[in-house]
Image 1 (cartoon, rainbow, N blue to C red):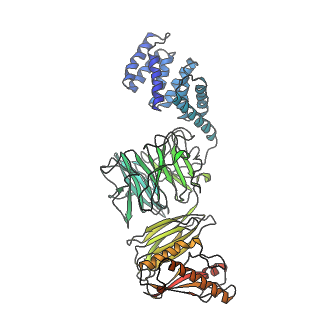
Image 2 (image 1 turned 30 degrees about the vertical axis):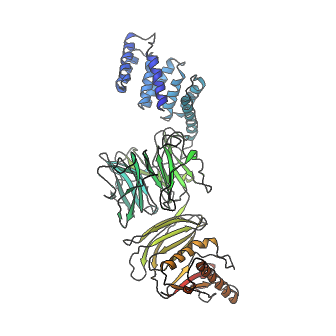
Image 3 (image 1 turned 120 degrees about the vertical axis):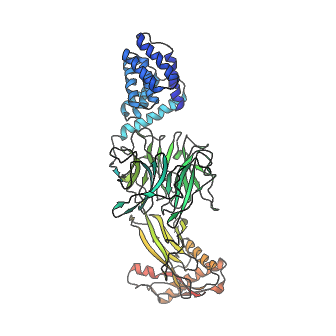
Length: 631
């Protein structure tokens, strides 16, 4: 872009050296005087003198061209358009690059149809060999073609200010929201200092925000461009010019410890580098970090990269998302929705309305991204649109802007997202883990496994301070849910979300039983085919959790129990239940558990947990469980 600008300015310098023969002396003197200001980059003074020149001689084509180019350079596009059009009116045969400059100004002010005609004139008549000129003109042509059509198909769009409880007279921007939609974290700039603020939502709406934490906010540095995990436990953010930084801006993370935030730490290499690393977006399971960088190896000035946590718990070398997402231009503000697959980002490289637009893409099952979809007009305009996030239910988008009628420099707004621009549906489990007897909060491990993909999608610990957790589960898969704590039996649940479209969350209060003789627990994620006793692959995560319990408690002995419903022959049911219990027993033996610690027994339909009067109840009675026999 700089090369193109300087190419045009070189053109101006050459043209300025030759006086326009039919110009009056006063106008020419003003023009010559303007060149001195131009050579010193004093653009305001140059513009003022050039306006005097065209006032003295309204036919002064070169003065109009120079006025247009300087105004374009300082982004005064409306003034630039006026001067370009006057120059072309006086001399339609002007250099083809003038049509390029006019088309760029028209693109950046929403004048799409005439802009398309002018960029076509440039491409047809340009006789030069500057490949950058031609490449950028072809890019503008695509933008203008796209915008000319898309502006006639407006999307529903009614932005609503979040109100004075969130927004202030200062600049409020970069919202981030937890999966339950109840906690909002955003940046606020007060007298040049950027800090994080947090607001909680109740029945009355958003409460007045408070500074997030003095562990994260500082007085001497700026914090911004944050991403919070869906459970609200990890905050990734950008910190710039810090003593521990590797480059101008680095990515940091802070972990919530109970109700307080821990001291943030720099992610270090290879995520951070000597270059600009910023705008993190963390995946719901915390295993993949997307961010923006201008490090070498990219496709444009700023690209979106990703790094994944390896088995040792370290961030791997970042990988560029490649041409499916990045362009030779700039990509910014990635936001990965809680569904783990839908990515929103801004770009001025994909066809759009001028400047940066917001796009949506979805990660396919084969690891590739769908072609980016422009969110359309008037969500996107010729202005710069960046920093959009989407509520967990996918219905609303949040963004920051200086729209008319706001409370300050920049406010946070929300609007209803068109159906085809929404992410995949999700639900979540929100709960608390307690001791069954004392009801005290527990420091417990909560793990969720996507059984269809055999992938752990959540693995973290609750705090003994509040015992709370929140787990996101995209619809369309089957999930195993485990909770465990030292000295306690397992908690097992299964969420079959393979059908239906309900995003109603699960709210649970889990009471863990202490390990003692007689403790009984149902393993809800042990699976067999109908009338078979061969363990299915989906059972591995549950069996691994049971295995860990036995290894962590070497004195525990148990009886593994198999149960069926009352359908069919009693003797056959008893044998089937015995064989299923034996299958679990043999798995544990194969994984070095002492057989002296284990027994197995089949009870058939003798111990139902509910009446066998419906299919749902019969399903509950078909189960595998264990009972502690010695400790």
